[in-house]
Amino acid sequence: RTIEQGLRVALSRDELRLVFQPLVGLKENRVTCFEALLRWDHAELGTISPAEFIPIAEETGLIVQIGEWVLRQACRAAATWPSGIRVAVNLSPIQFKNRKLGETVRAVLAETGLSATRLELEITESLLLADNESTLKTLHELRALGVRISMDDFGTGYSSLSYLRSFPFDKIKIDRSFMRDLDGRSDSLAIIKAVIGLGHSLGMSTTAEGVETEEQLKAVRDQGCNEVQGFLFSPPIEASAIRKLLATEA
Ligand code: G
Ligand code: G
Ligand code: MN
Ligand code: NA
Image 1 (cartoon, rainbow, N blue to C red):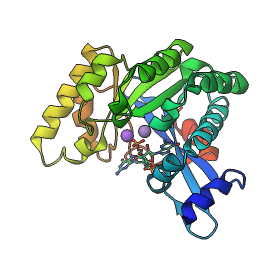
Image 2 (spheres, rainbow, N blue to C red):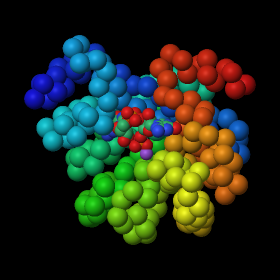
Image 3 (cartoon, rainbow, N blue to C red):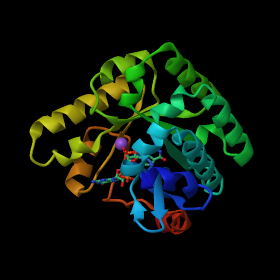
């Protein structure tokens, strides 16, 4: 209740903000992309995680408005970065059911001047549970604009493989639970190895999420993973800290 009412005014009151977590290309040996992650600074409750309020925003339909705000802010920020760096934006399944998504993305790119090739849209497997014609149509519409589509949290859903067959994703993000288990469980390594191989044979790029240790980094690098994301490199940071982070790389 409190959260639902609060969300309605959060947008107008400037209580929402984005933080950005770098994705590091292992071949390039530099930051290739930043994932935009939403934060809500609630006046009384403090900072609330999207894991808590996104489900409520989805139930109430507010996610459409919030999602558009996220997209616009993320593209606006990315337009100020060096041109070799992309931005990744998470999309809720509800946003996909909105037939205007393609048009919204096109309009935001035009408005912010960000090249479509610098935008990645992340979709979790659960989206595709409603694997129907209209979802596929929207995915192809977005692809036609030139944006990249990533499958997020890969390996946590039930039908990952059939999704890969239905739609040509540009990138697979391997869920961080596999990284967490890497140290103790050899079967996690086998799965990571297989997913990276699968992605590459389908022409998709692979990203390992939740990389926290040098051992995990070495394991995914040895398997030919393209990109890594995780606390080993950086937690999500404020937009204002991005220039400094990029400067330390050069
Ligand atoms: O950043 P954090 O670990 O708190 O994110 C928790 C969850 O919220 C993750 O699953 C992440 O994908 C999701 N999330 C973060 N920002 C957004 C957003 O802007 N839109 C949507 N739909 N989900 C988001
Ligand atoms: O579901 P999605 O992959 O979009 O979620 C991104 C979330 O993962 C962010 O909220 C971020 O805080 C969290 N995250 C990013 N890197 C790490 C990490 O190395 N370890 C853990 N435990 N969480 C991470
Ligand atoms: Mn994500
Ligand atoms: Na993820």
